Amino acid sequence: MDTSEIGRVKESFDQAVAHIEDLKSLQQLKVEYLGKKGKVTGLMKEMKNLSKEERPQFGAAVNETRNHITEIIGQKTQALEAEALEAKLSEEAIDVTLPGRDFSLGSPHPLSLIIENIEDFFIGLGYEIAEGYEVETDYYNFEALNLPKSHPARDMQDSFYISEEMLLRTHTSPVQARTMESRAGKGPVKIICPGKVYRRDSDDATHSHQFTQIEGLVVDKNIHMSDLKGTLELFAKEIFGEEREIRLRPSYFPFTEPSVEVDISCFKCKGDGCNVCKYTGWIEILGAGMVHPNVLEMAGFDSNEYSGFAFGMGPDRIAMLKHGIEDIRHFYTNDLRFINQFKVTEDGGAKNESI
Ligand code: PHE
Image (cartoon, rainbow, N blue to C red; front, side, top):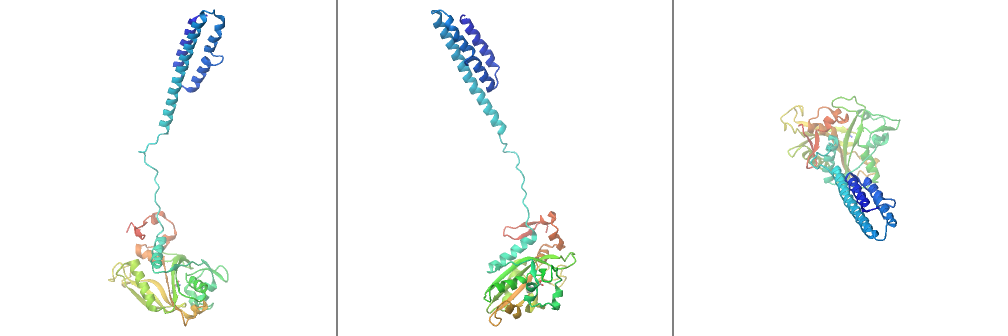
């Protein structure tokens, strides 16, 4: 055994390490040379066969080779680790210039928009929003509103009965009766009630068996017809434009006395006559009146002390007039091409982009 054997071990290591390309193979090579049964360790074991004189020189040469191998493996480990990190980073890199995913913004339903506009207006006047039931009793839908069983005016609202006593409400007026009753004869009551209502109608461009109403009710001491008129005048200006005027025509509802039909001056032709107002200059938008004393009394209010006004309007019709929508069925058939035309404006109002 001489030092040339050491030289061969070193040379074979140098050759092998040059071909190593991953950390796992490098680890195996390390074991092969420096491990317990490794080649360098094997050289050390040869020492015992050498003469005393030869040992120091041989020992120093083996040490040098071991140091060499240790150092190269250290360097190679660092290099391979850096390479692996680099590969991982470039693989995970995010290209910030790629276009993002498109989250398109939906549109609120035009009826929701108009109802929110109307709610905002009345909340501004101090009204509360009240809710009732779409499945109602005959009592609240009719009787408590001064429409006893045989009353001919029941025919004005063809109904979907569920049983003798239960029906789909035909108007939002039962909420009047329920709210007044819940206040146990004490005013003031100042509510609006938006909601769905149902009537047995054949659906066509202007009729739908399901539609929406907003009921308004104010009950207090000293409430007069002039309060109703002033409120509705403000409402017309808010929803249809500053220059709008209103006109009251005598009408009949069993739950109000006197009753009126309310028209607004046409917002399209400003009164000259056009197809929207059917050449009259006026558009009918709601029914209203002073709460009938019988209705007040049935709900527990003393009609000598309290009086009130009520009104009912159809958001469907108002939205149709405002946006020039020609068919009420658009509201209930959920065609996105229709709904997507409506956007919320900055002041929270509705805008139909195609008009
Ligand atoms: N409930 C009535 C209808 O549906 C509308 C209305 C409400 C009229 C309140 C007067 C007062 O026809």
